[in-house]
Length: 139
Image (cartoon, rainbow, N blue to C red; front, side, top):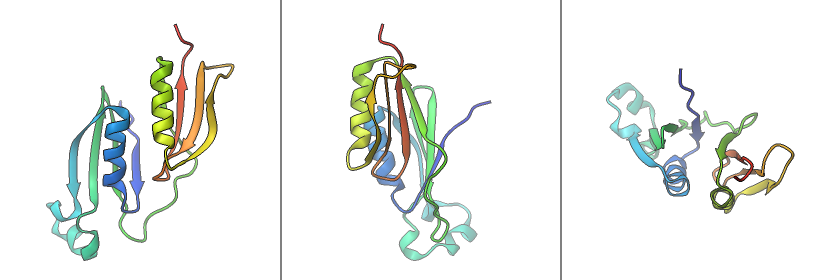
Protein backbone atom coordinates (compact mmCIF):
# COMPACT_ATOMS: atom_id res chain seq x y z
CA UNK A 1 0.00 0.00 0.00
CA UNK A 2 1.13 3.51 -0.77
CA UNK A 3 -0.41 6.72 0.57
CA UNK A 4 -0.15 9.89 -1.49
CA UNK A 5 -1.26 13.37 -0.47
CA UNK A 6 -3.69 14.78 -3.04
CA UNK A 7 -3.99 18.55 -2.81
CA UNK A 8 -7.00 20.45 -4.14
CA UNK A 9 -6.79 24.05 -5.37
CA UNK A 10 -9.08 26.80 -6.59
CA UNK A 11 -7.30 27.55 -9.86
CA UNK A 12 -3.74 27.79 -8.50
CA UNK A 13 -2.66 24.17 -8.91
CA UNK A 14 -0.22 24.69 -11.76
CA UNK A 15 1.54 27.60 -10.01
CA UNK A 16 1.63 25.66 -6.73
CA UNK A 17 3.14 22.53 -8.27
CA UNK A 18 5.78 24.48 -10.21
CA UNK A 19 6.70 26.13 -6.89
CA UNK A 20 6.79 22.74 -5.09
CA UNK A 21 8.87 21.24 -7.92
CA UNK A 22 11.52 23.90 -7.40
CA UNK A 23 11.31 24.03 -3.60
CA UNK A 24 11.26 20.27 -2.98
CA UNK A 25 13.62 19.26 -5.78
CA UNK A 26 11.07 17.05 -7.51
CA UNK A 27 9.89 16.58 -11.07
CA UNK A 28 6.40 17.01 -12.47
CA UNK A 29 5.76 13.66 -14.15
CA UNK A 30 2.08 14.04 -15.05
CA UNK A 31 0.05 17.10 -15.98
CA UNK A 32 -3.39 17.18 -17.61
CA UNK A 33 -5.76 20.11 -18.00
CA UNK A 34 -9.53 19.73 -18.13
CA UNK A 35 -9.37 20.55 -21.88
CA UNK A 36 -7.04 17.56 -22.38
CA UNK A 37 -9.40 15.10 -20.72
CA UNK A 38 -10.42 12.16 -22.92
CA UNK A 39 -13.84 12.29 -21.16
CA UNK A 40 -15.82 14.87 -23.15
CA UNK A 41 -18.64 14.84 -20.59
CA UNK A 42 -16.22 16.20 -17.99
CA UNK A 43 -14.82 18.84 -20.34
CA UNK A 44 -18.30 19.96 -21.39
CA UNK A 45 -19.25 20.66 -17.76
CA UNK A 46 -16.36 23.07 -17.20
CA UNK A 47 -16.69 26.79 -17.90
CA UNK A 48 -14.54 28.03 -20.78
CA UNK A 49 -12.20 29.91 -18.41
CA UNK A 50 -11.60 26.68 -16.46
CA UNK A 51 -10.60 24.49 -19.45
CA UNK A 52 -6.88 25.15 -18.92
CA UNK A 53 -6.95 24.52 -15.18
CA UNK A 54 -5.34 21.34 -13.87
CA UNK A 55 -7.39 18.16 -13.82
CA UNK A 56 -4.47 16.12 -12.45
CA UNK A 57 -0.80 16.65 -11.67
CA UNK A 58 1.82 14.36 -10.20
CA UNK A 59 5.11 15.51 -8.66
CA UNK A 60 7.72 12.84 -7.95
CA UNK A 61 10.18 13.56 -5.15
CA UNK A 62 12.58 10.66 -4.71
CA UNK A 63 10.28 7.64 -4.37
CA UNK A 64 7.33 9.72 -3.12
CA UNK A 65 4.55 11.34 -5.12
CA UNK A 66 2.55 14.45 -4.36
CA UNK A 67 -0.59 14.84 -6.47
CA UNK A 68 -3.19 17.52 -6.98
CA UNK A 69 -5.78 19.26 -9.11
CA UNK A 70 -7.96 22.33 -9.36
CA UNK A 71 -11.40 21.68 -7.93
CA UNK A 72 -14.20 22.47 -10.35
CA UNK A 73 -15.87 25.82 -9.61
CA UNK A 74 -18.12 25.62 -6.56
CA UNK A 75 -16.36 22.57 -5.08
CA UNK A 76 -13.36 24.19 -3.41
CA UNK A 77 -13.03 23.92 0.37
CA UNK A 78 -10.29 25.43 2.50
CA UNK A 79 -7.82 22.77 3.69
CA UNK A 80 -8.33 21.88 7.34
CA UNK A 81 -7.54 19.06 9.70
CA UNK A 82 -4.30 17.94 8.00
CA UNK A 83 -0.77 19.00 7.13
CA UNK A 84 1.66 17.69 4.57
CA UNK A 85 4.57 16.49 6.70
CA UNK A 86 8.16 16.46 5.47
CA UNK A 87 10.77 14.57 7.49
CA UNK A 88 14.44 15.36 6.94
CA UNK A 89 17.81 14.64 8.54
CA UNK A 90 19.73 17.66 7.19
CA UNK A 91 19.09 20.81 9.28
CA UNK A 92 20.24 23.15 6.49
CA UNK A 93 17.80 21.53 4.04
CA UNK A 94 15.01 21.72 6.64
CA UNK A 95 15.71 25.44 7.06
CA UNK A 96 15.77 26.03 3.29
CA UNK A 97 12.51 24.17 2.63
CA UNK A 98 10.72 25.75 5.59
CA UNK A 99 11.67 29.29 4.62
CA UNK A 100 10.94 28.73 0.93
CA UNK A 101 7.48 27.29 1.66
CA UNK A 102 6.81 30.14 4.11
CA UNK A 103 7.40 32.84 1.45
CA UNK A 104 4.14 34.81 1.14
CA UNK A 105 2.51 32.32 3.51
CA UNK A 106 1.84 32.20 7.26
CA UNK A 107 4.20 30.68 9.82
CA UNK A 108 2.15 28.88 12.48
CA UNK A 109 5.16 27.69 14.50
CA UNK A 110 8.68 28.90 13.71
CA UNK A 111 11.26 26.25 12.88
CA UNK A 112 12.82 25.46 16.25
CA UNK A 113 14.19 22.75 18.49
CA UNK A 114 11.61 20.63 20.31
CA UNK A 115 11.82 17.67 22.64
CA UNK A 116 11.22 15.32 19.67
CA UNK A 117 13.16 17.03 16.89
CA UNK A 118 16.28 19.01 16.21
CA UNK A 119 14.04 21.34 14.17
CA UNK A 120 10.26 21.41 13.79
CA UNK A 121 7.99 24.07 12.33
CA UNK A 122 4.51 24.55 10.90
CA UNK A 123 3.27 26.90 8.18
CA UNK A 124 0.56 27.49 5.63
CA UNK A 125 2.02 28.28 2.22
CA UNK A 126 0.93 31.00 -0.19
CA UNK A 127 -1.52 28.54 -1.80
CA UNK A 128 -3.28 27.72 1.49
CA UNK A 129 -1.67 24.30 2.04
CA UNK A 130 -0.57 23.47 5.62
CA UNK A 131 2.91 21.96 6.06
CA UNK A 132 4.97 20.53 8.93
CA UNK A 133 8.74 20.33 8.61
CA UNK A 134 10.47 17.90 10.96
CA UNK A 135 14.24 17.41 11.12
CA UNK A 136 15.60 14.60 13.26
CA UNK A 137 18.50 15.18 15.59
CA UNK A 138 21.56 16.22 13.59
CA UNK A 139 24.22 13.53 13.40
